[in-house]
Structures are given as C-alpha cells and as structure tokens.
Length: 247
Image (cartoon, rainbow, N blue to C red; front, side, top):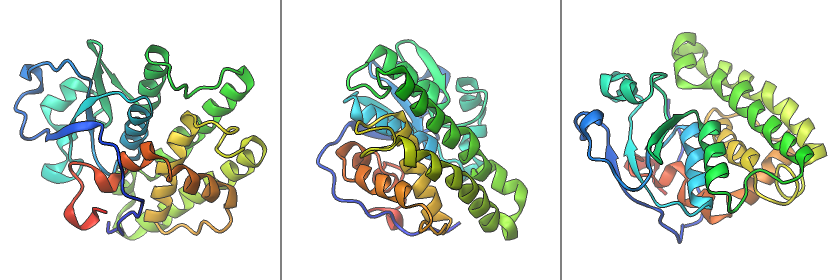
C-alpha cells in the first residue's frame, strides 16, 4: 500500500549505531554475538516502533538488524529468523543472553531491568490504566489491521477493513483517555501506553482514518511527537526506510 512520508522535526539524538539487513547476515545462529542488545526491526512495523521508543527513552545503546516483511516474500519467514522467533514477527530483542519477542513483553523487561526513566507508574491504579490502554491497542486494534490479516482480507477490502478496525478501537480509546489523560495517556508522564498510541495513530494516518472524532488521541500524539525519543525512533528515520519515505 502507498503512504505519504511522516513529517516530524529533525532529531538531535542518534542511538542506533548502524542498521544491518537480515539478508546480509548469513545464518543468525552463527552470527557473532554483540555486547549490545540487538533489535530485529522493520521500519514500518508499529510494534517495532514501540520498542525503538522505549530504547530511546531509556538511552539504551543497541544495534539493529532490519527484517523486511515484504521483500523476498517476507524475510520473517526465513528459517534463520524462525529459529530466532518462532512467531515469525518483529520485533525481537536479543539482550542479556536471551531473546524476547512481543513488544509489550520487551518493554516490560526493559522496565524491570533498566527502570529509569520509568514507563509504568508507581501508583497501582495508574499502572493498571497504562496496561489497559497498551493492551487495548496492542491486542484490540493493531492485530486486526496488520499485514498478515490484510493479506487475508484481499486487496479491494483492505482499506475499509483497516479503517473499521482502527475506528472501532479508537472510539473506545478516546472515551477511556478522557478519564485517564493529562498531558499524555495517563497523567503527565510518558508511559508504555504512549509508546503504543503514537504508532497506532501513524497507522490511522496511513489508512486515511478521519481523526476528527478523536481530539484527545490526536492531542496526545502530537505532544509526544515533539519528544526526541519519538523522533529518532520514527519510521521515516530508520536504516531501512525507503528514500521516498524519508524525512
């Protein structure tokens, strides 16, 4: 599907030293281990973007291996990548001698092992709200409009399907945020919920969803996109971003 380039202010921070492609690595099982965490990512993957934001916020230096979800029939289906992540999805993060799939599991691990700055509030009620919003997006919206589902829907119905899935979820999310939001999704501190929100709003823009009915969602997303961590992790500034989508 086509899309227009994302427009965000220029970044001033560079966290990922270099990006490498999966195709250029040979076998993942024989790849030389790095002392830095290694993120397997695709520029347009909203799940990968969540993790890139977390790594940026926590100032974690890492290396990136890009996995093209479209090229060669999808590099995530290669034997090498399946050995790394049997779900054949990005992101995956190699860190501390283990490999973690699923973006929220990765973010929670980073939170538990590298807790500064915190992405889960200390207050248990606020923490529950953060997890609720994160799960609403990560389980209730994004999976219904991701690449694998849209392939099953068929080319002619893909846009309307994605718009319906996102709008249905945003109807609920807007209502929830009206009671939980401050400057951001839950109060005035950036949390895991915000890491899920911004990539999903980008998906909504990509699929031409009218955001007029969602003023709280729009306001929070715009505020977050002024933050450096959200800028450097943006899809338009990744090693595998096509030239026509760079900004």
